[in-house]
Image (cartoon, rainbow, N blue to C red; front, side, top):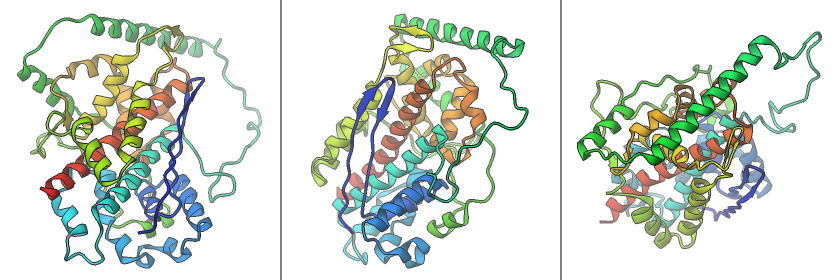
Amino acid sequence: MHSSNIRLHFQGKDGCVYFSIISWYFPGVFQAAARHHCSYKVQQHSTAFLEAGGEESWLSGLEHAPTKLRGLQTLNKLLAHRPWLITQQHIQDLVCAGAEPRWSLAELIHAVILMAHTHSLCSFVWGCGLNPEPDHIGGYTFHPPSPGHIPRSPAHEDGRQELLDGAVEVEVLMKRMVELQQQEEEYTQEEMVTRFERQRSESIPTAVVRGAPPELMLYLVEEPEFRYEDFAPRGEQSPPIMRAQDYSWEDHGFSLVQRLLPDMGQFLDEEFQVVSNLTYHRMAMHEGVDTYTLRKALWNYIHCLYGIRYDDYDYGSVNVLLERALKVFVKTMACHPEQTTAHIYHAFWRHFRHSEKVHANLIVMEARLQAALLYTLRAITYYMR
């Protein structure tokens, strides 16, 4: 495996977080981006790969890539769409003495982190509506307004009503957050489990199914028809739930990554901490707001979609704080971001700033990343026993 260089950089400013993950020599990242039809990331990584001296033929299709990289396709597929299906057998197939060519555990964790990061970045790209750069295929261009186009003024009756409705939504959310923070009622463990199961099995529709992926994407992925499916479709037997008390990033994942790939665990931990703790203490038109309960609900809802349960968290809070339109957006972005549309982006938090919606995108991205890593790291842990 070629060596890779990862740079993680965080800087908070005016409601935004900037960070970049750059892997100059690992071609698996554009194959990871192709799983979500993300031409923005595919072209970005492909360009960086070629500038670093990569073999151009590898971009023409999987059959041109080295055998060692082709061996990652099953793991890449599961990481992107159904990480809970990853088992120690998948790890053994790549690292055991009989595997040819063989991956070391350190190499494999490195590759998994790069692929999982790329998948989560695809969620961020689709969730923010980013288009390829101007010098890339399908890159954005600026067009003048259409002839005769007159933007609707907020003073218009419909626009004024929309603003009023959005303001009411903010006030209701603010009130619910305060009530949850002051709530003293405790529930039995059985009730907590029931609330989790109710949330997990809730039927949340997602956006439209797009047409066939670009031809370039088909060359770079194995089984392009393999997509996300609900962790436990209604009425079907679900895989075993991952209880955070049994396997968590803080108590298990961090130390495993740190042991096999020194410093990487610390980098990831700082990344999770920065995004989960990020706040500007404001919400829509309000200042000085404690948004912890809302941020926690978003994070835990995404983990719930991935079959991860926190025994000490009341999942009833998710329905209290996350409106259905927001759930549709979050589930689409976290589970199959290539189906994200402008309509579902504008349908939730209608009175919030774009920077606040980007903040939500960051939480979705990092929660999804951590969930995918937890399932893979747990499989590696079982393999090492």
